[in-house]
Amino acid sequence: MDEDEKSIRLREIKYGNITLIGEFYILNQINIKIISECVDFLIFKDKINDTNIRTLCELTKKISKKIYYEDNSLLMKIINSIEDL
Image 1 (spheres, one colour):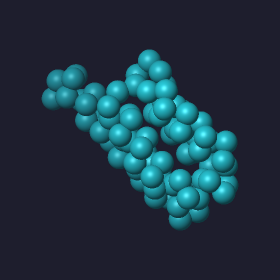
Image 2 (cartoon, rainbow, N blue to C red; image 1 turned 180 degrees about the vertical axis):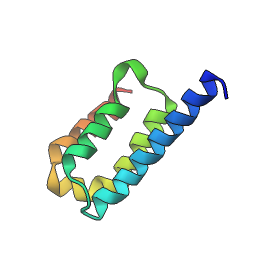
Image 3 (cartoon, helix red, strand yellow; image 1 turned 30 degrees about the vertical axis):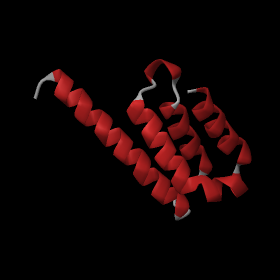
């Protein structure tokens, strides 16, 4: 594997892990702080791309009901960042 293939594979693993973290959050296995860090990673302005946006939308779709009641400000941050794109 060359460096480009490795970086692409590592990026795919990161996005898969974020999806898994969303599942753990729904099952109350992790707290809201970890979700917040995942969101910050996905909306980092210098590295925004289609995969980040897609992963953020999928994560938001999964956790939106629970996060609405637990931390509405984080949900508003996600929605505002998606609107800005």
